View 1 (cartoon, rainbow, N blue to C red):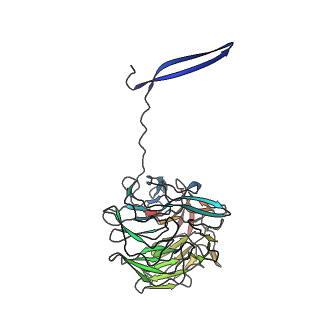
View 2 (cartoon, rainbow, N blue to C red):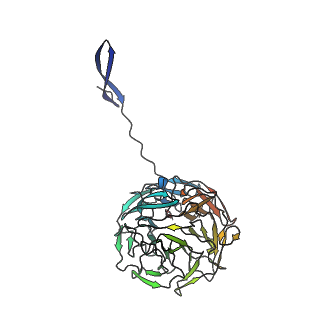
View 3 (cartoon, helix red, strand yellow):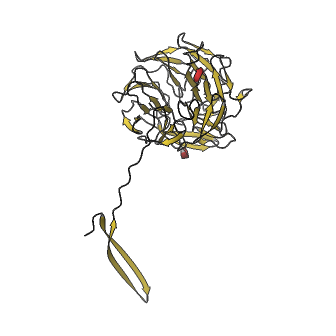
Length: 451
């Protein structure tokens, strides 16, 4: 009998010998060998409150990923976290409000990318599914599915604890007007009976001080028409009401609620940049000419600023700084392309490594570094667009802005690809410096602060 902790096994050996005549020799040998110990349980890193979570996104080989990670503010490093229930990018992500906040990651798509003729494009299958992130476990759990599959939708945490999910692309690449609400206590979505006034994708949704949501711009059809329309969502009535149009029809822009400036623009929304509608070939977009717009919720007006943005860019990041200023960094320039189920793309070597600061007290936007006509100097370590950008609140880099991942290349040039690099912007010194890299490259991935 085999001793405890051992297992009996049979090993058969065969030997063929050629020498004048052939013969076969077989032997059966009994062996006792130790049992293989069980595989150790996988250790999952657990973030602290305020750490920056990034889940999914476009990664190596231009494919979507199910992995996640977080930036640990106490150490200034990235650590891997749990895995999403499925690979996805272009999700709608938000932190719910209330006594027991959680992170919701909804929709997105299983995407595959390619580079052809100098153009980076993505295609894939949209998802209905959603998951929540456990801040105390570092893992994801599937939650109720959405009513509609959505890619590049928006997710806005409402003051009543719910999450508003609007628009996005359907599986055929068509922007949709529908919207739904996620109810954290129930773990379910409900469909909003009244759709938005316009289908939208690559639009913005901004929570206002009174709890309403401003929804602005976006792409409205499969040939790339953009819209100047905007509307207000009222959570109390679950209705959308049209408001003033923007001066220009844009998509892929940024939108930030101005707070902390103690100025005339306090409580207004700064909207900037993006791209205009397609040209007559149906696929080639023009970037906005560095447009900056203010939405006044009290008056319901949109006002174009004379110096609201300096350089044209789309898919940039916008980060609210102390004092109400806004850092607008990176983004894509050149020609933007759209075709059928393709998510988006750009000409190579047209990703930006410049940045600018919008000051609402003036109000105008100026380059980080000296202003030059129609553009800004390259000041970032990497050219990047569709990146994550978060103001850090604790640890050795408190007060700085973390910029991580995105699609891009070194500032010196190269073919764009998803980045794992990160850098830090110091608002006091007005400088960028290298940060620790992510665990994997990521682009088109929203970030949230862990509740």
